[in-house]
Amino acid sequence: MKIAVYPGSFDPVTNGHLDIIARSRQLFDKVIVAIAVNPNKKACFSIEDRLAMLRLAVEGFDNVVCDSFSGLTVHYAASVGASAIIRGLRAISDFENEFMMALMNRKIAPEIETVFLMTSTEYTFLSSSAVKELARFGGPVTGLVPPQVEKALYDVLGVRFQPKEEADQ
Image (cartoon, rainbow, N blue to C red; front, side, top):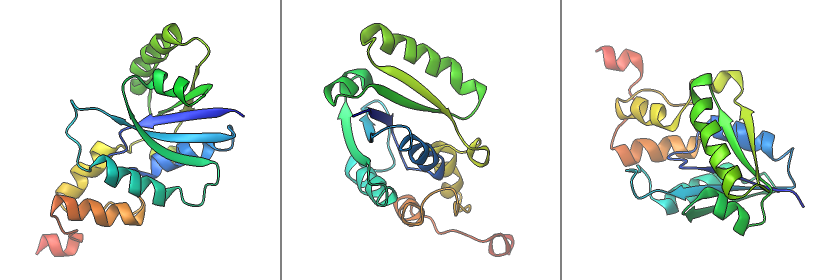
């Protein structure tokens, strides 16, 4: 069985992430979407909330499971028997950092490959940080995140979406 790990913070999960997950599940027998616990990052959502949102978002994907881990991604991948780590690339600016990480991972565990997937065109601008910033100012995030994430995002930020006409008044 070919297993891949798709790691990230998923704070929150976006439709760009879901695009990568959907395409990854066609390439591998099992995809583990794994939230990396990073104590140095200030997350908007707890690990538990992110896992719950991820599980809802991938509910129809029979070969996708969600998990969380701390430590090195490559060690986690080895512990679950993965042969690949999936990384999504939006633009050339993502590549340099991802390339260096892939080389470091290969040095640690040469049996685990890094597979880069380019995001679909409609998501090249999309990041969790951009979504949070947009929502923080009451901007529309519909179509950028799953519906349940949209509601949770406005709730956790204590913001109400303001349509343009309402904001202009």
